[in-house]
Image 1 (cartoon, rainbow, N blue to C red):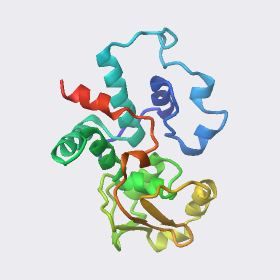
Image 2 (image 1 turned 45 degrees about the vertical axis):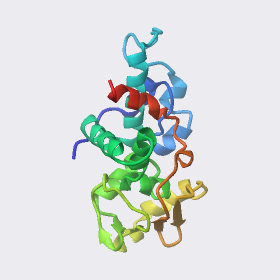
Image 3 (image 1 turned 90 degrees about the horizontal axis):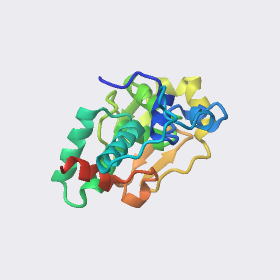
Image 4 (image 1 turned 135 degrees about the horizontal axis):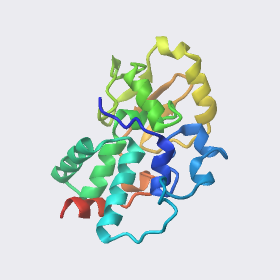
Length: 208
């Protein structure tokens, strides 16, 4: 499974905003964006005016980094979005939100998407009673996601819930933190997705 293995904080600094890739650290004064709010590298502090293409590219890169997706898979999701009825950009975000690792994060069972991806890969979650260890698995309305019985004894999930317990669960999901279980009620609408992404710029980029 291909994934980015570099420094997460550099990605946030490159986009000039917090992408919340490191979970708890992002909410402390150790956050790199708070300490160095400029792009990484020797020319990072130089202000550059982006072209139209540059603005569109940065928006795509930001979306990829929020969800931890590489280019080939992101392009595949875009092609899926085109084939669906409705607005392509909104379809794209809906597909990204439907990834199992994102749903685990949204339910509060992972402090960050990166941790949620790792927990899924290590086989800690069941979907409709069957173990699924593929982070890119796309959930559907009615799917039940729960922590595997043996994994419920892990102290890490208790630690996670201490951090995420007060988190607002999106209305398209239902969470039962006591039993480490959740359910997909429906697929998310655009207003249910709180990430600062201008999806129309991504569509414009791919449409060229």
